[in-house]
Image: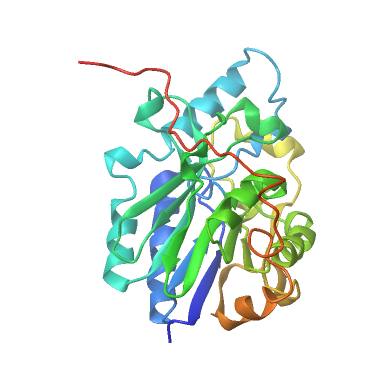
Length: 316
């Protein structure tokens, strides 16, 4: 049965800017998915501890204001440092239940000084090992006010049964060259993670599937006014301009022919299941393979720098 893969799309809301409580929701979702014999579970972009919605609601670009400093500090304090064991329980559950995990986190890595944060997509294999951490290459618009730009180190793919998985964060999925890098590594299940909303997922999910002749799994989070915890710094100012719904979901799956397997699911929290059949990839690659028989490497090639970037290099 290596040619089939049961996947779970975890369309859940964070306990916004609360790392510990949001991780509990992640862990409970893994346990629930394992009970349904899922072999892969995917969570949305930056789910732990949540998307920086305050930037668009509190004048995030205003210079040197106390509200922006307080919210940023709260955000960084609730971010994930993998080196300090913040994902250990998630890894243990992955190993215990033999389930692979793609998890969107706000990462606070020690290899960049430990104070800047990145929107990172973490892949944990069925042995509970972190196999890649992809830091979003280019934060989008107001995200740049709180997230640092990443590097190419996480442009990796991972084998799971007959399938080859790779993933990108949000609008990175619109970047042709990172997509091509993953295609060139043999990707046939593309993971696209989003903060939420079908306006992001409804078009590009099918487009990437048709371009790559791969399965595309888009997973989004949910967020409403009621999901802002009462102890959030400057909550009153955030709620002044916050709409009732900030992220409506939109998680979905397209097949290698670009047609829907699961259309975007809106306003519904929980796990969404589907079983992929690898033979569908082979069928659709018959007439188009962007990096195989329908490519011309003698004319166009892509060069990718996967070195993990750091400001300092020490020679002792």
